[in-house]
Length: 230
Image (cartoon, helix red, strand yellow):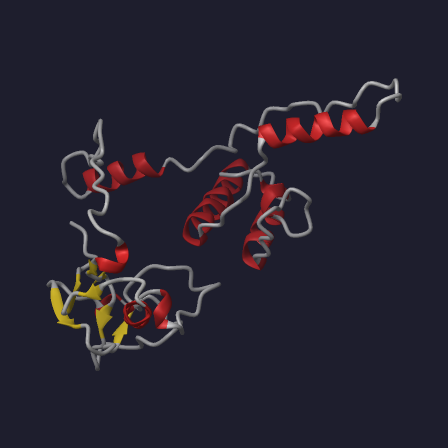
């Protein structure tokens, strides 16, 4: 878990501009809680919320800081006072990253599966394009689901809807943009409306790129891959 000043609104260290009312209230409540058990419960709630929202916090570059320090010293030549140093302090014991990999292993083992193992290779093959993109044919693979009447709200901003999942690979024409939805996908619904389908199914953008000559062609069909696990 990141240091709380970095995610509190109005704090100089909040470089990402996080302004989450629920998160702020939880942090302030934790600071006022002296019962150790309750304190840890609130901490875990904060960690889960951070994991769901996936806030990106910008860090500081040591190289850039050193460069700026040299520039500052260069502009203050003649000032005999030594530059002030910011003391380094250890973070609290509870201020550690969320061990999501171990949690995933524990979760699958509790379900009766063998210890989960991530794909890890010593070398990752990379194949460069053998021709310019303007001469290549592009295939589109998506996890978006075809609209299914009768399984609940699937519109933009709909709550997570597992009933809208699909369980087999499907294929459809790239001639026209079909009616696909993403209510079955976990994404940041607090800050994203999903109203513009081009942001998660860019078929129309690819069609325009073909007309503009940026890519050679599209494959006749696109393919949908299920998002189911285990």
